[in-house]
Image (cartoon, rainbow, N blue to C red; front, top):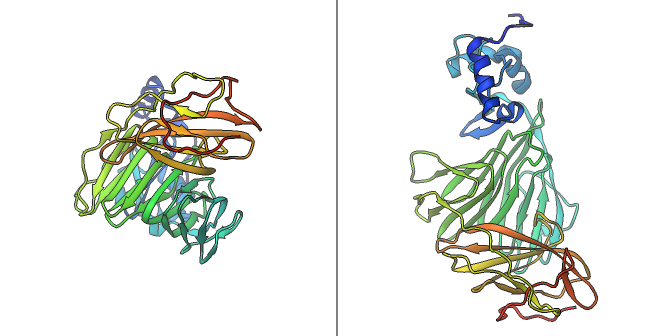
Length: 371
């Protein structure tokens, strides 16, 4: 079989392209790799794609095009329907090891059987455990960042990448605790990114999400992008989009996909000698979660707390630029959207990025001395 060149896009294909443009879709993003589903890697077809090209790109064997044609029931390998989600067996795709590394450690943690340390490499099979008031962040080969807060037990079941495209092939298992992940931040998509717990499997296709596992089951919150959840006792995958969350109970039954609580609104400053951060109460919140980090995305966390009311005192911290991330938590334990406040600690006082004093709350729940 030979490759055809300068082939005219069929009229229906051209109309599909124009339709996508009219909706404001970006064709490269629309056609990017779309993660995995079960034992298949997914690629959404764009104008100009042929089975021969895709077979060579992903499997490194052009002659696999016939197997892909049969599997996906495609009549013309040169006119694959635009928008089709092409399935490619993961078993066809050559892979290679892609170690991760630790980029941030706060407090007490172990990784691969030793005390966790910055720049420590991690490979398939490594286990990371964080203690009380501790935090670890990993970086994968594709730039994905995975943050582990206190009391988390994570096993890196698979750390690989596709040989031909360098797309990540990552499988994680969370036995206990939480993760906060920014997956494929460069926007090029993922080969496979799965998070497994005792009650469900979450498939990720390039997104920012949080996942929590404990004796009550699993909860996930999606901040950007989309995830697909396969609960143990459910027949169908459940799609969870940005701004939504889902709980799966300890028996493997999924609840309803629901909207996350909105980000808390900061209260205007009331004192020139501030002691902390105050926020407007969020309807439906049963408690509030806060983290202090040295980066705006909240991956380099140095402290974290929970409180029954939306007010947090600042802990002791070195002078410098910091960020406070605060979110509301609902009755199901789903953590809502996050408010991020940049602030500066000097030798004597705390001011926000615009130079204004940070708000005082009427009552303090986490008292600690200030600089």
